[in-house]
Each structure stands twice: as C-alpha cells, then as structure tokens.
Image 1: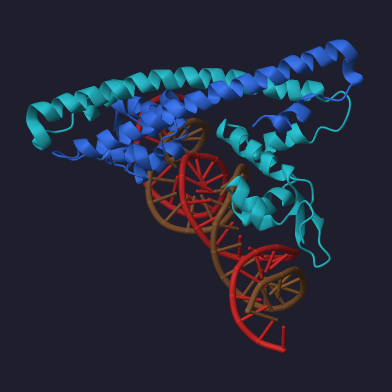
Image 2 (image 1 turned 180 degrees about the vertical axis):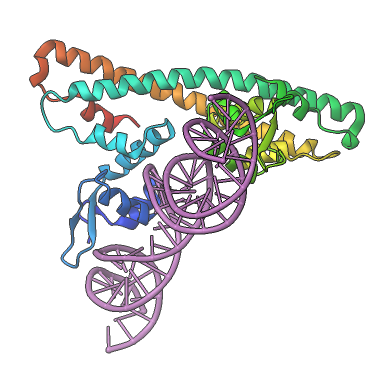
Length: 138
Length: 138
DNA sequence: ATTGACTCTGGACTTAGCTCAAGGGTGTAG
DNA sequence: CTACACCCTTGAGCTAAGTCCAGAGTCAAT
C-alpha cells in the first residue's frame, strides 16, 4: 500500500522521533493534517521527514514549537516582515548565546586543568579544587 | 537585624530571581539550608547571591539543576573524577552546540537576505521566499 | 499597640513538550 | 481465517523548573 506515501511509523523512524511525537506535531499544526487511508491510517508525503528534522534543529537552536509554527504558518503576502523579525531576534539570541558559551567554556576548561593537576599531585585523596574556584567564577 | 546576613527578599533582588525560586533552590539543595532568625526568617550569607548567579549561568549553558547540584554536592576525596567527567561531557556538548549554532546562523542569515531582496523587489505583496528555502535546509 | 511590609510552610497549579494507556480497528502473510 | 504488527482516538500522566496561594507569623517604625 505504498505509492509514495509513508505511514506514521516509517516517518517516525526516518526522522528520529516517536510516532507519538509525530501525532503530537500534527495536532499542534506543525505538520499539515495528513491524508488518511481508507481505514484511517495517516499517509504522509516523504518531505515530512525533512520537515520534522528541521523542526528538531530549530528547537535545538532555541526556537519553541510555537516559534516554528509561526515560521510555517505563513500564508501569502506581507507576513515576510513577521518572519524577518523572528529570524532577526533569534539571530541576535544565537550570537549572544555563542559568546556566553565561549566564556563558560573557558571557565570549565580552567576547572578541568586544576582538577587534573590536583589529581596528579595528590591522587584520589585530595579534595576537589573545582568547587572553591567555581564559587568565584563570576 | 543585619550583621552580615541577608533576608530572602534581598537575596532575591540582588540575584535577579524570585523569593520563591530561592526557597525552591534551598529545598532542592542547590543552596545549603539557610540559618534562621529567632522568628524563623531565613538568613543568608552574602555569597549566596554569587552562588545563585552561578547556577543561573550554568543553566543557560545547558546544565540542569540536577547537574549543578552534582557539581556542588561534592563531599571530600575522590569525587573529583565525577566532576571531571561531568565537566568534560558538558564541554563537548557546548562545542558541538556552538558549531550547530554557527551553521544554523548561516541558514537563517541566508533566509534573511532573501527576504530582504524579495521585499525590495516586490514589496509587501510577494509571498515569503523563506519557507520554500527552509524546507530544503538540511 | 497597630500598621504595613516582609516572611513562613505546605501544597496546588502552570507550561512545554512530550509519553503512555486503554480499548479498539487495519493490513498482510501464512 | 488467524496471527501479528501496526495504526486509530481520547485522554491522562510525566518532567523540569518554577509560580502562586492561603493562612499564619515576624519585624521595624510610628
């Protein structure tokens, strides 16, 4: 029963989420309501897999499902501006997040080095020096 | 009533969270149980503010409160290794996250440019080109 | 002694994003 | 025709990280 439509299970495994999640996304309008077989099974177009992957990626980047739906729910004219603003805002977020991360990475790295030195010097027995330092790290 | 102890409200405003959150953190063992006044009011040492800020920062970096508590809950010897592993894991996470973000930033930037061009070319009336492109973006 | 701002505890409620369960139907291979 | 994997809907439950509430007590100032 497979011209070029996929069942929910196939979609799920190919996109790396659970069938429940796929249904959830449909309910949540992140996916258009899928066509149904005569018996009521959902039949998805193959692109759905890509779409779900996109959703997941956006999510990782700090977009909420609501945000993503906004991106998708663009009808015709004029709303380009809305999308633009959303993207712009998220871009700024991403940039500052990246900077914060770089910083924090340094802090953690620093702790790691201390940790290693301590281990080398006194073995397992010594108290961890990280916590002392961690309190001071802005 | 202030030698060098702070009330919960002061802690809250100085560290930028709500009093409820401070109490929550105490219950959750992210803060040591605070001393109490004769009447039962919590009295915090000033460092608590820094500690809460650290928690918030770690959280931003993708640590869960549970992770943070692990960092804090180090007793004495030997657990240095545990902390080490946690930090190491988080560092790797951070790095891959940063890369993902760089990537996604490019994708979004690309969309923005298209969006702008479209607006310049056809004004508000044109359909947003982002969505077409977005579907294809891995 | 009264006011008004602040705090206490315990527990219920919230939001996002799933995840599970119950009870039943579908599709196909043997 | 029966087995078995898969699917359906509805609706409840879960986790994280708070947030809010009621009813009561505390503290400093007037």
